[in-house]
Length: 128
Image (cartoon, rainbow, N blue to C red; front, side, top):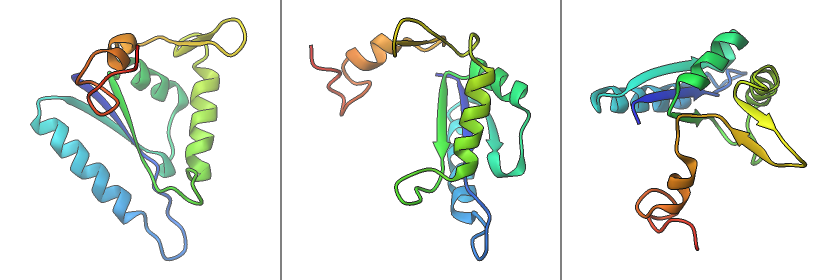
């Protein structure tokens, strides 16, 4: 993986300035840059262009959501981002087929990610 997209879903409100999410996003970005990866990021709370975000998703080999979990869910701004980007990205980011089946169009080899040892699920791959 060489192209990493980091989505900072921290939300500024009242006494919280989203500093922890900003710090963790900066740490991740620095780590990947030092690992010779290309990194792009979006701070969702500062606004974004939906078409540009779709381009970033198509460019990315890996997407990282850095955000707080409020009552076990993401901030509303992250949900809004996902709704806007995934809705407008239909046909580019994914295509719906019969029923609930969704095929993501990506440069990632998802089958290998979930089945090859040392890639996912505690380095064991998916059960056969």
